[in-house]
Structure formats: C-alpha cells, structure tokens
Image 1: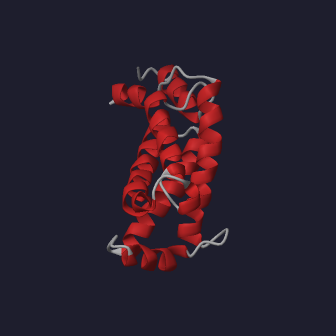
Image 2: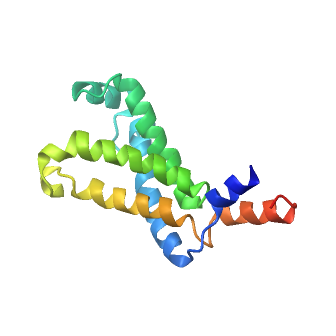
Length: 152
C-alpha cells in the first residue's frame, strides 16, 4: 500500500508545479463554488443542474454536483498541493466533458464560447497529473512523514 502512496505523492518538480498549481487551482475552485454555492454570480446546484439537464447532461443536479465537487475540491487540492494527481485527474475529466459536450460546437475561441479556455485548463491539469505537486506541496510533506515513520 505504501508503494501506491509513494507513486501518487512523489514528484521531482519544483517551482514550476507551484506556479501552475496555484492559479489553476484558484480558477477551478472559483468555478466550482459557482456551481455548488452560487458564489461569484453562479447559479448553485439547482440552477446549474437545470442548465446541465437542458443540454443533455442528465441527471442535471447530479452532474452539477459532480462537476462542482471536482472543480471546487480539486481546485483547493491543487492550490495546496494535496493529493495533486487525483485532484488534477478529476478536474481534467470534468474539463474534457465541458470541452466536448458544451464548447466544441462553439468553435475554438473564447469570444464565441469555444474550446480555447477549457483546452488551456485541461492542458494544465493533465500536466499536473503527470508531474505531481512538486517540491512545495503538501504531498511532499505527507510523503516525508510516511518515510520518517518507516512506511517506505
């Protein structure tokens, strides 16, 4: 079991992961808070769920809950570097759905609600899933604690 944690948490990245994790995590957490809590002009679970159902993502409320949680808690995880890889994968899957289900038919550019923005965030989250949280992440602290306790 400890080998799995080591693979999940370890990373050779440094400042580059931090520079990517914090702003991407902030963006995702803000978007998730719109879906979950109706913060920052969002519609909350009910409104987002109704919209998701209207575009064929059913059941809408559940889809809003899943997307909101992936974005909000995944974003917080990325900012802190806590379970970076799972947080990044959850966010990447959510962004892939958004990109192909919502934005694909709108073209490329953000000005027409195309895939541009979702693609940028998808690229960043996939990169974080590959590189991990880096040296300046809570993942590294947890890994050090596991190693110090003799669970290597």
